[in-house]
Length: 299
Image 1: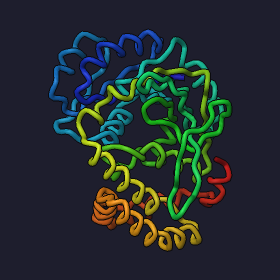
Image 2: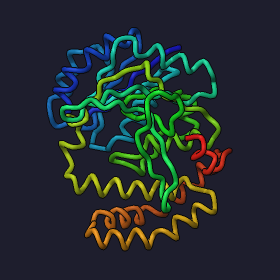
Image 3: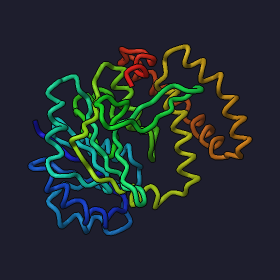
């Protein structure tokens, strides 16, 4: 089973120097592709020292388009997405690939040893529920294999199903929710996704590009925007659509009380994309075989 490893990069020169050798050591004969999102540091010069394929964006596109470009060029049946701030432990691929013996499996997530300040938090398994008109997601215990989504920074995906689903939806660009979205679409389309605790990566989140490039207000605004986009793209159960509409006034009033201007800005930015969201919704709706409530029961 041929594997391609896709590493999106933006101004991650120091992380590449630190983590790319570890990726190469842990990945055996896997193809490694680094997609540079128009970095302004010396990433390209650093990459010249490594035997990897490099794709360069002419302008900064964001996470989803950058990953999609890498997956399109990958020759492997299975594509493994790793962020630059992630380093895999030895033989991390073996337990991941075992799941793909079942042709209905779309994606498998890694055990993410997340370095958060002085603590190491075990992540990688995601749970979610429908609450007050939105999908609310949270970290799940890592002793089970079911998951609502596979992390786009440390997970394996079957390329043929990825292409059938249309890859990451670029409406979420520059970041957040794209991995939850494609995982959710896969589950609604009848495919399987799993969490594998034996496949371990180290994730130093605070050193990633997002926190270095964007303010906390911008990050919050994008997260709110994409939360709206997710619902408008994927939720088809009529009762849940009504629930979303019903609870909007509650959320608006709460945002006013909190003086949370990012919420209103996120909503407006989502609204500006509404026509494109409806066009994308029409394309993906034909793939769905399960109802939304079935997915929430599964998670």
